[in-house]
Image (tube, rainbow, N blue to C red; front, side, top):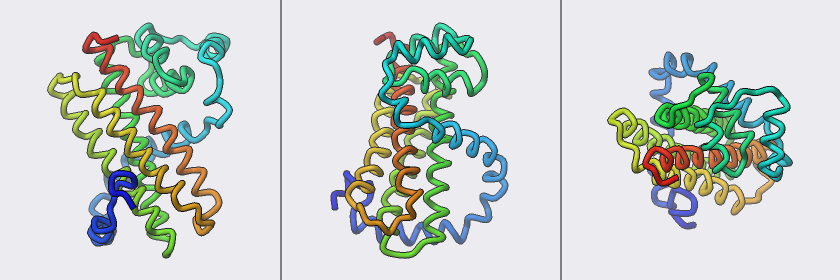
Length: 230
């Protein structure tokens, strides 16, 4: 098993298992924060998991027409950013649904990082809850994904720190690294086609990985606009 491919090497997995159980013991200290974010996390997961696979193959122009037909107001900044992504309508729904109309690239940077962070923490919590409920042999792949999303959360934390110091040039790098974490989780799922995972969990994580990659791409595109590379 490749450490890069699956986020956790076999040696690191043993350490991660220890930290995971330590996390469970100390999780009560996070109860207040978890309660505060629960509404936003649940809403974000519902939005991100509601898109179906057919929408991913839509032509961009068709997605734009759908937005126009729905009478949705899209700001210039959101329009320009989303035109550079693989899924225009997904991008618009994510950015415009966060704080209402935003027409400044620097504001979009904060919005895109926050949305990706909420999505990552929601997926992280989903995996943690299943680790608490389930037993071997599926724990290995779930631990891998748990580590992947832990890494993604840390990366987005660095991105947020940079935004707070008005540093934008590394956003594309953070975007790629965050997206890679979700791709690593997907690689772990694809590399372990065991039917042991609950039938609903594999497609749910696959959808979450796909959505998180799309959200991470938005961060990178926003960064390129801010730094004048687009």
